[in-house]
Image 1 (cartoon, one colour):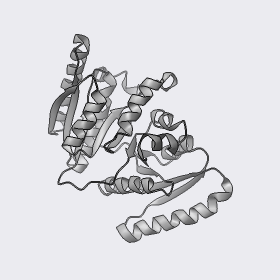
Image 2 (image 1 turned 30 degrees about the vertical axis):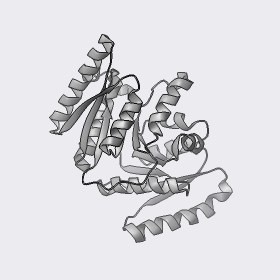
Image 3 (image 1 turned 90 degrees about the horizontal axis):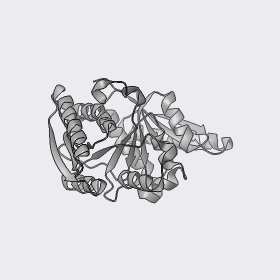
Length: 274
């Protein structure tokens, strides 16, 4: 499978949480041929030279400690907009951002935190904790009744390949017959897709009443390294309740990293994804 991009971007703000994001990004970059960029967004152009000097110290430290050459970019603007723009400019496959829980996610980019993630055509990985060292990397992939939930499968298969990761498909036990039917159809599609790449996986049913809670609890029990989620395409009608559900999973209490992917409109025309 080909990489969907040429680079990995880390949102950098000199905090301990951006250090965590860099740690995770470095792990991914070692498994691929993608470049790694540290991107710092400033509010005043007059701060640019000082920030470049400070960023160079970080770049030099990473090279000395890890032997990894990374690039740096300092851009004046808004974090919620310009981090995504820079990621597009360097053809990023994924953006890593560190946060300290729900409040941290809100504060990272002000009131536009969720909008930054949910408007992005490039996936975001939200990091809250140091990278765990296990014998095998573990991914949890929720599949539900929405046709969009299948769109994570490309990335699941790709990471399973490059990381030799253990995959678990989790899906809710709905009471609605219509949702049960659509969910089982999506699970069947997912299994067929993974089988086509000869990727082994487990499948687990979870409680549908508090599905996000069940996902996080299972991921903790599984000692998972990453949870996948599809965010809401309709950001203009995002309300408090849907935002809080998404935010809960993204900044979960167990501090498990979350891979956030927005539905791709160009896939909706393909019969296999419907």
